[in-house]
Each structure stands twice: as C-alpha cells, then as structure tokens.
Length: 508
Image 1 (cartoon, rainbow, N blue to C red):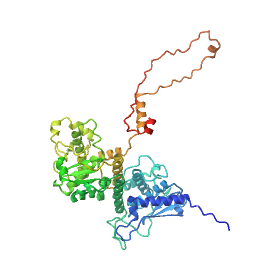
Image 2: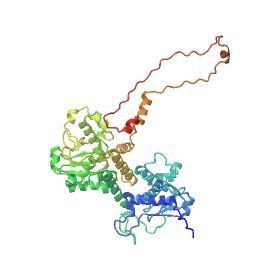
Image 3: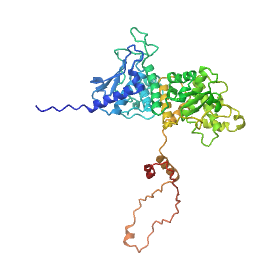
Image 4: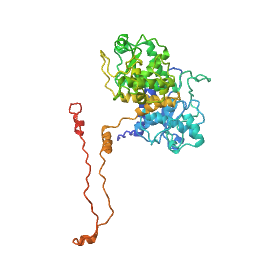
C-alpha cells in the first residue's frame, strides 16, 4: 500500500501555539496563569476554536472573566502579531476591566482597549496587527468611557482592540468570576486569594527583577552581604506597593556599610547609577517613611541620569538643583516622609532642574552651606566609582534599562489609577522614553541647518526660434550676470585610536 503523506500542520496554528508559550513564559503575564494561594483561582488560558460572533466582527480574540481567551479560527497572523493579541486580552484581566465591570458598551470597550494599547506601546511585546493612532489619550479609562458616552467614540480610537468591529472583552458569566483582592471571598463560594490585578503586580515585580538579572546584575557578592533589613524593607515596599518605581526598586541594591559611609562622608545616602547601588549610612536614625523617601530620592537621581546631564555646570550646584526638584515631586506625591534638613522650596515647584540651577547659581556663598543627603558641600550623585570596589561595572545599556523601567512603571501607574503625578516628572519620563537619534540622522540635520542646498532655478520661457535660425540679427533677450555663491567648508574627524571596529570605520 502506498504511504499516506503526513498532514502538514497549519502555520497559523503553529504561530498561535508559539505565541501562547511566549505569553505564559513572560513573568509579568505568566503570573496570571499561576495561583499563588492554591485556593483554586481561575487561571489565564487560551483556546483556538470557531467563534461565530468573533468571526462576524472580523476580530482576533476576546477574553472572558474566568481568564479564558478565545481566539478566532479564521484570523491569520504571524507570531509577533499573535503575541500582541494574546497580551492585549491578558492585560484586560490585569487592569481589572472585567472585575465587576459595568455595562460593556462601545464607549467602555474602546476606552479599555485604549488604556491597554497605551501600556503595550511602552511594553514593546509583540506587534500590533493593525495601525494604532498616534498619541493615545492618557485619561483614565473609566473617565474616558463616561466622556465618550456623551460625545461618542472617535473613529480613530474605535478599533484599538483585537475584537474587530465588536468588543474584545466579554462580561458574560464564566466558570468562576474573579474580583479584586478586597472583594475576593465576599460572595458565596468565591475563592479566597489575590485577584487578577494583584497577581499582575506580582508578575510586574518579577519581570523587573528578571530583566535586571539578564542585564548583568551581580546577584552575589559584597553588596549582598551588607544589606540592612530596615532599608531592604523600604526598597521592597516600592516593588510591591508603588508601580511607578517598582521596576527601578527591583533592580537596585541597598548597601549599608559603615566603613564605606565614613570613608565617603555619607551622612544619610548616596547613589551610583552605573552600579545601580544605593549606599546608606546604617547609623542614620530614620523612620520607615523617611527611608522610603530616601530610596525614592536616590532612584530618581539615577533613572533621570542627573550625573550625565551636568554638562558645563558646577557638579555640586547641579546636584542641589536636582535635589530641590526631586524633593518637591516626592512631597507632592506623598511618598514617605522627608527627613529633617532636606532641600525643599515651595517657590521652585514646577520648575525643571535646569531652571532651578539658573536661579540658585547667583548666590554661591549661601548654597555652599546647603547639605544633600550625603552631607554639606557634597553631592549624593556619585559620578565615579567608589575606590576599593571589586565588582566590575555592568556592561549593559543603562539608558535603555532606566527608560524601560520608568516608562513601564508610569504606564501601569496611570492605567491602575494609583493617583496623580507631578506634571514635570511625567514630562521628564516621557522625554527619556524617546530614544536618541542615530548619528547619521543627527549629521543629516546638521547639514540641513548649516549647509543649505543649492536651489535650482526653473523658467517656463521658451527660446526664440527666429534667433536660432538667424543668429546674426540681434534681438532682445535675458541677461544672466555671474553671481558669487558662498561655499561651505566642513571637516570630518576620524577616531583612529582603535575604539571603532573595521566595519564601522569603513562605513564613515
């Protein structure tokens, strides 16, 4: 008998299965498929089957309150597109859009999809299968839904989800309804344990920790042996309770070394952004709230790259200006409690660090007497490594890590409605999220600015045919005198010290 050829598996189904593995293998989203309490909570799971309403709406998938994500059998996409679709549905659960959800009308469904898509843009996981509008609204989804119920959903925001022309969240009864942690166990037969948003917060902290470890964080060493329980508790509070700085806190180490603090004259704390370490004086008597304030202060110094932005300014005065700005933000956000003597001036509220520097640099004699968290006349932002440190600096892209940690934390903070943030801080975080221009684009812009191109002159006048046939007869015409044109001279500097490889040097 002739052998039957084995049936070839559908490539679309293979892409869907591979996307499932990526989602469940992601610590942030995979936490939704894990029950940490063992109480039998519903878990995130996927199926690929015939869904008639979804097929009619030409959608990709939709999610149910019990964690079941139904993907349309007739939707075709690549792996990264399916990753975006499945992550979109999982994030609806994570943001609590199905926990006691109100009526899921067009306004509420579109607002929830806008909030999730905005978070996915900062997450950079997968690729959206359709074109998203630029500048998604930053308003809370519930307030946005209320506004759109009165004014109507704008057409450009009506298709930000993955449900096609219909909603991608299905509030119908599932096998088991999951509510928030506060409401879990309140109904008869409801399981006791963390809800979808609580499990997502656990996964978010695990993602930050994994990213730092993959980037080259030193897991063991002298820093790990000099941890203080009180300061560690302050750092862990941000990981579990403050989404904006959770990613940063998961990647920092707090070093409480009395000898090091005395050698570097650290009265309370200082930070090394390159090593992602905060050095504290274990003899500093602070309350738990004051320790949280100090940890947040030093992490913002590092994440906003204050050591690299000093430029031509005096390093200490620049540190003082940054202290005024950061302390104003932390007091406005009510993060912990400010220790006695920190730099704070209500008149400087809302100003950038550059503007504060220009204002305070006129009175150098008074400012030299001010003290940062490190001490009087000393900056708490360390621009060089501590002497005697035996750990090698991490060979990672610190700018990319700090940008990702802050932008992801900001998106989750806004999506969960954890409170208002200072406008200046949000503006700085969004500015950091914009990647720097490549050198060739910067060079092109420099040429456009300093070396204008020679413009061609066009004319629609037709030459006289009589003049061509009788060149000896003079006739009136146009006279074009010679013009002097300014020429530009520029130079190219080649680095021949050996720091550029052969391929890059040949392409210059």
